[in-house]
Image 1 (spheres, rainbow, N blue to C red):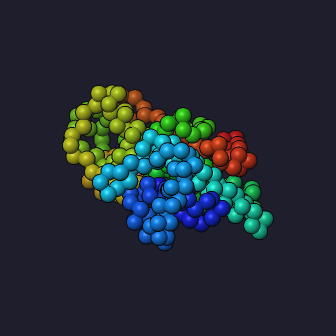
Image 2: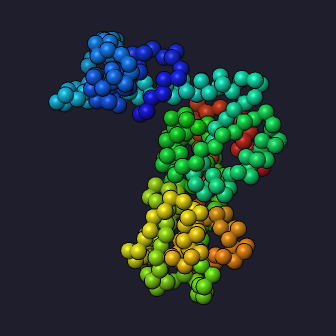
Image 3: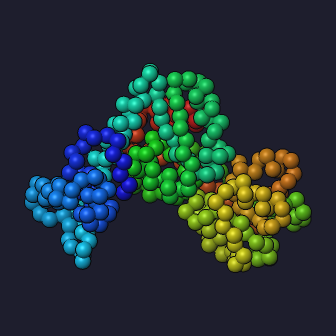
Length: 295
């Protein structure tokens, strides 16, 4: 857990505790915190005295959390998450403007969400929105840690860990260059083409891999992973390979004819997009933005 010491209302013993977990030794934690090693040791001793038992075991020269330590770690991380939420809430009050952060996966952030944010900020001019774009795994972690107020994802998530509201249904399509002539995508076509795909951890890759497994589709081993949708489209336009992505991501290319979509012989591939948030997210903004975006 990367710590950022911007809000010092939390007792410093907790900074020492989490930094020792992160660094593994008292010496490294002390160096990172700018404290003496005895001071960090004293902080840990105070916590262990308060909870009535050791929180670490020794493994060689490293300190490793024991069962009690893991329980205390969960409490500490929750406290830091709440602290970050409070800090951002206070900053939102500055100058009469409200400031919120939204996290989005690549397809959503580049091709779906911007018009919604633009219309929302036009209707509510005192709202300032920042947007972070990353793959599904990273964005889910950010919303759970309170680093973004609201997330919109295209990939799977654990519904026990976050609150969620459905956003929309999105279709994923097979794309190829304009020289393609087949009426539908068959097993033979897939086996004879190089696939250019997003990396594992992205929502697009997850749903494609799931579709392939469910339909019993066989692919050749010529797979190239690329983290940029724009780069994937350029490679497909050049005839280097084929890909699968959201229809929203290729609207421009389809309109000018530089790319073609071909239907799957096994049937269409749909996925659901969701808003994710936590019990600590700013509820008034969450309700307002979701209502605005889905009405």
